[in-house]
Figure 1 (tube, rainbow, N blue to C red):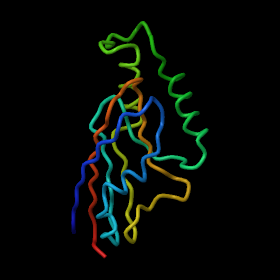
Figure 2 (spheres, rainbow, N blue to C red):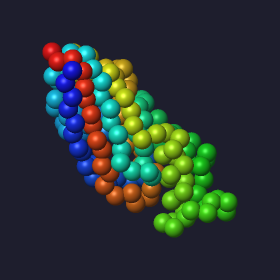
Figure 3 (cartoon, one colour):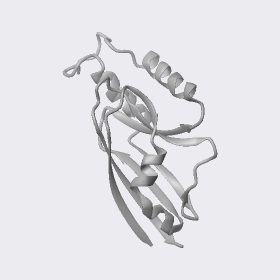
Length: 142
């Protein structure tokens, strides 16, 4: 079994849900070496997250943001952790709900995503800054 690991620094993005599949693929060219395997993408932050979902219609991304803002509102007087502003604790909660990594099968040198699936960076901060990812691929080589 072969294993490869890459680092990717994403530039800062506005709050919302952003497709990053092409950036992940550019950062991890060794995926093409695997006949059968796995690819884990991990985000090294606690106020942003990753998920896999619809990659075609941008209204899905807007609706994700609407849902999470309703489910985890800012300025809740019960939140104690607000050192970095009203989006601080909600960002941590949203990241905990969505998670810090995605695991994707690799088949014949390609991510085995469905036709309408893409990897999202979920930016939960108003000014989150750059985000660091670790991409680890392993499996049986072609």
